[in-house]
Image 1 (tube, rainbow, N blue to C red):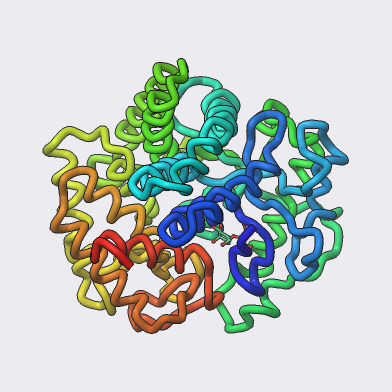
Image 2: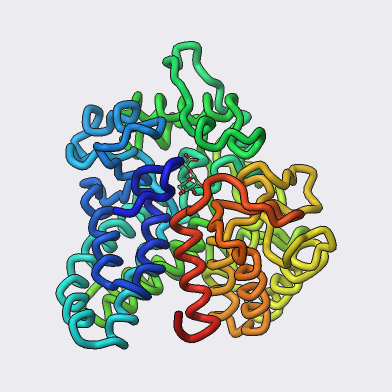
Length: 424
Ligand code: 2M8
């Protein structure tokens, strides 16, 4: 496995691994397959791909395997390797499709190796998608439910502030020591201690429910739809349906139905006044109106009519977002500069994340918005030009923040370069 970052994240993270595979596919196809195999080795019996697969030799991250204690709570979790008990956005089918395309184009050993590997990778993905479609959307709403901000991958995004307002940390939260702030010590770049208490408290709740989805759904204090994750899921189902066709598997129809269900769910979440798709807090049934880049989710999976789609692209390219005069580069910040919640250096509350650019470049290209895609790709590569491969960037000054040498940043850079130049 590839560490998500050398010191801050010394294990394998789920959607980071998918990006790592997307990047590695350009330089080393067998390593790209091995990256995903490492993640698949942590798959739960339910089909869930856990958000962290732990490397037992690494002790520098908290909360580690002992805090999660998944295998002690449920037989659904593997004993080896140890994993976390949550999941993250399902980018993996997009990665497998990319590996297959590149190997097929290259031919020779790569093509033969991927032809052997693909059927079992497909089976892992099918189980994963069925888990999400059934257990995370039992009412067939077309929107996935998450139980923790970590599942969205946008941990402390202001999208979730109102949801976290309902998470009351119990007095029996065990004592703990953070490690992340010893690696990234600059004030304000990591979540606060109060936020960390809530993160860890939710894990206590999950353990109390023995990581059982039905029990969690009934009891979790953090429960919300995630429109961005749902859009990624719709796009991933399209990719997996294409892989099913390629392998002659009979699940294409089922996967096509998932894709349509989630595409519709995402499109229906658009708020006409804001022009952005919104999440819904499932405990209060209120829509969450903070303007974050997750609101552009419908572009990731398609499903808007031509007029609505154009409106959304225009909003993205407007002075409210990409053309904002205070931006160092025309790259999407994680929260709109117009929002009172915008903080330029605070993790998912404002900084721009190269992997997010990757999503929207891909989305714009696939919707036929090639000029907008090329502009965003060019600006993101300029942002990456200092070579630090930072985890996230201050959108006002362009300074790299968080960890340096972040794996998925490197992966996104590789893929964006190939799409700009046709080769590395
Ligand atoms: C961040 O999340 C982890 C918890 O999962 C953390 O802060 O410790 C997020 O940016 C997440 O999206 C990412 O997958 C992970 C590893 O890069 O780091």
